[in-house]
Length: 186
Image (cartoon, rainbow, N blue to C red):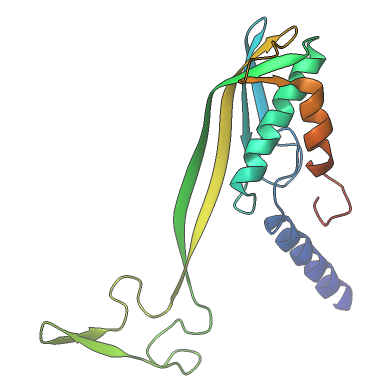
């Protein structure tokens, strides 16, 4: 019995740990952590690149990983310069409600709870007219960045929209977190 409880506790800890981990730099579906990069070749020197993060991944990280992937693809395909056209970052915000396990149930419930009422237009009703007094509501936001990447040989000195792929790798590389790194991520 003790071994079963320890195994269940370990499984719960792993599950909760995965939920509280920002998306590392990885292909989509590579680990149990939601999100990652994906790309699609449009033509010889043109790609569509996306990076999606989970609810713990910041917008800055999502946009940085998109540029890093574009730089990697450029070098892998023999190009040393790229331009990210039609860049966009989408924000998906949802509100998730779940019953509060300590206060849910009937007015007398499994545990005692305070019960407030208020008067609106002469009638008495519950304290929270939208969710009730036994719901926990939280905001969940996820970001996804996308761009059409045009790769080139050589960058013009005055081209302010072009990125030198090796410079992007060198500058952003130390901030890129991959799966299995010792900072607590998968």
